[in-house]
Structure formats: C-alpha cells, structure tokens
Length: 433
Image (cartoon, rainbow, N blue to C red):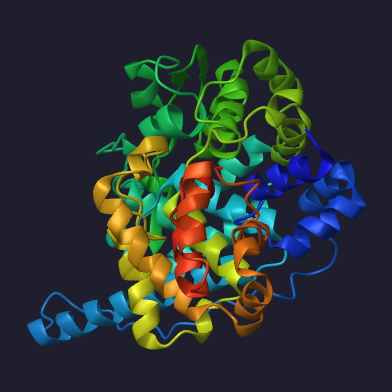
C-alpha cells in the first residue's frame, strides 16, 4: 500500500475524520511517528472547548408540586442538550483526536444513557473519567468505572445492598465490559453483586459514597476464587482474567479495524501487547493485519457527521440554534445521539447503519453540512476545473478514490459545489472506510 494511502487509512480510523492537511503532515512525519503522536500528543489540547458548568437543580421533596417537578425535569433536559452540543463541538475541535475518539469508544463500551441518569454533570464526569483513565491499565480503569456515579445509577448499583442485592452491574461488568458471555456463571454474578454492595450516589455533588452497613462483608466465591471480595478486588479479579485479555482486543478491533473477526495470529499478537490500552492501540495500528482492513468498516453516524464537519470547516458551536437542532435531530434520525445509547449493549455496528431511512436522514444532514461549508473549502473546490472537481472532493474528504459509478454521479453535479459535497458525503466510498 502506498505510504499516503496507509497514513490516510490510519487517520480515518484513529480520528473522527482527517483533513487533507493533516494527511499531508502525517505523510511527511511518517507512519510510526504519526502513531506515536496520536498516542502521546504533546501539550494540552488548546483546541478543545472547556466543558459547560451547570447550575444546581433544586432537590424536590416528596410533596413538591407538579409544576415544580416539570420545571426541574425541563432544566435537566436542557442541561443534557447543552452537554450533547458541547461534546459534538469538542469532537470536531479537539486536536488530540485519538483521545476524543477513545472517549467516544468508551462511551459505546460502557454505554451509559442520560435518559436514565438524568444528570448532565454526571454524564460529563463520566466522559472525563474516560479521558483521564481510559488509556492506561485496563484493570485500574475498570476499578475506577465501578465507582462512576453515572454508571452506578444506569445499572442500579445504588439499589444494591446486603439486604437486597441487585445483580445488574455485576452481570454487565462481566458480560459486556470485561469477559463476554460464556466466561462466567450465574453464581459468579450473584457473588459479584454482593461484592459491589454498599455504594450510594449524591446526584447534586456528583460523588459516590460507600456506606459500610449496606455492604456484604462475607466470603464470596467468584470465578473460582474465595475471599471477602469488595468492589475493587472484584473489578481487579475480572479485568485480569485470561478471557479479559482477549475481550478488549476484540472490541478495539471491531471499532477501529474491521467488522470481520481478526485472525488467530492477529489476536495472539494483540494479547501479547498486554492490558495497557495504549499498548493495545499501538499494537493494533502497527499490526500487518490492520493494513488489510480498508473498506471494512461502516462509519457510525457520529463519526460520519463529526468527520464531515471537521473536513468542511464547520464548528457546531458556531451554528445557529436552529442548525444545532437540525444536527442533533439528524443524528437522532440516524439512531445515534451522544449520551443516549439505546441500551447497555451500546449501539449496533456495520450494515445496521445502512438502512433506507438512514439514507434519507444522511442526505438531509449532508445538505446541512454542504450549505455550511467554510468559504475557503468551497473556494478550493470552485478553483478546480469542473472536470477535476470529483478528484478535488476526494482530497477534501480524504477518500482514496471513486468507483466509476460514483464518479459519474459526481461529475454530473460538478457545476454545483454544494451539491457535489452533499453527494460525496453520502457516497459508499465516504460512508464505508
């Protein structure tokens, strides 16, 4: 594979969508240096906007009026909307693109929804936990996550007491977050739930509190080990199981490399990289098998939209209120709005994003993006000869090339740059990378 094509492939997967200038710079730096820069960017991310600060919402007593309850609920919804808008803007503007891409990956992995948590500060707190702790040792990260306020609320952890064990968090911790189905038994779930007892959440303060009298201090047998496990010991145990060593590489492979399972040889190499997340990412991006995965991933709607905005010079924060509503409404039409995964299993992948209805929603969003493209972007397209504009568009959108069928469609629209951009954004070559 030519160096530029190999670099473009890397950046398409490790960022939300590279600009042509970013590919140029990475080509000059070389592949290995680019991988290192993605994994270890220098300095703070000056492009990333700071998170919003929310006013506290008054606690309502049992006798609160209906009007007061409605007002509080409206405030919560407004704060979540602000949080979604902010995160979309950060995804576009962040210079440390792999960091933000990993935050989005973990969001789909731990799959916590604001629709149940109903507290924007807790959701933003979880995103910050992903940024600060999601790139090192996976066991330490897992220990951190079982104390995350939003995750505890999402999986009913605050209801888990010695007198009334709730198994939701223990079950999903093993099934969806660390081990996978078939690598634990029901008895492990019940014992794990006992280990996780005792936590409550202070929504106003955004903190988790351990209440000793609610915790089960008895001996538990989990995955063949017997001890008076507490939450941290339970998390450490599951995250260091042999099954976990293969589970996370599989998740990373499906999100960053291919919708098809990796070969045993690739899996063996990734397992050999250990359980540090950055080490796994480096092993993945430099594995010979990664080069062969071009054209095997369907972009998730958020990836598709954020990438388009990056390449077209659009900042969500600078859109009008109506345009931001159109953006989120469009993502809702594509069935993927940040902070609102559909279930604890997260979002689907692959061909699930390529339905007839999604194409209509994609066309409308692409029209919004094409209409909002920055003037220099449109000027570059207009500066190209009409016959050369499909190739100019390919460079702008970092597409390796068009099929004859797509090229003909684009050639017919080349006289209208906005229409050309819209068609390029919904093309198979852009949607599948």
